[in-house]
Length: 146
Image 1 (cartoon, rainbow, N blue to C red):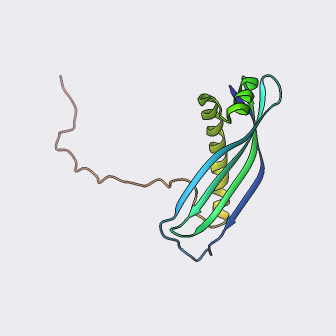
Image 2: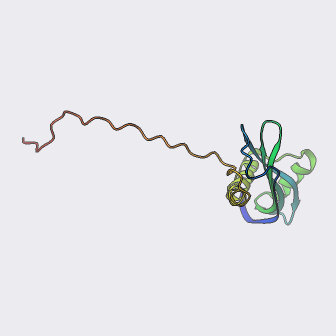
Image 3: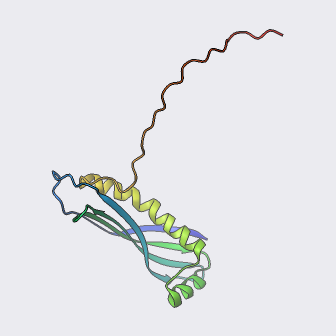
């Protein structure tokens, strides 16, 4: 199982609130969805996807980033297409691989778009926690003689 190709086909982004507004309790939800799987050959399948980042405050939509694209999956493509056609689901290991590739490629793109729209990045910002310095120990440090 391998992802052979990844390409973006559409990027849509919009800020609904003014950049001077500072919404409180902003929630950022992101989601990846597989919209279609088609067979290219016995070993390759085309997987269409949509990545969405929604910015919501308490009672208003603040912004939206939507990215669409296509992945070429290499593996047991015929079985994948049959299962998708009949149940609209993929085997868990294939779904994990595909959604990981979607998120790892689309989130950095969404971060750059969010910067341009003056929206917060759609990732949790790391918190910096610098521990207080420990007082120096009272152990003697010096040469050890045997």
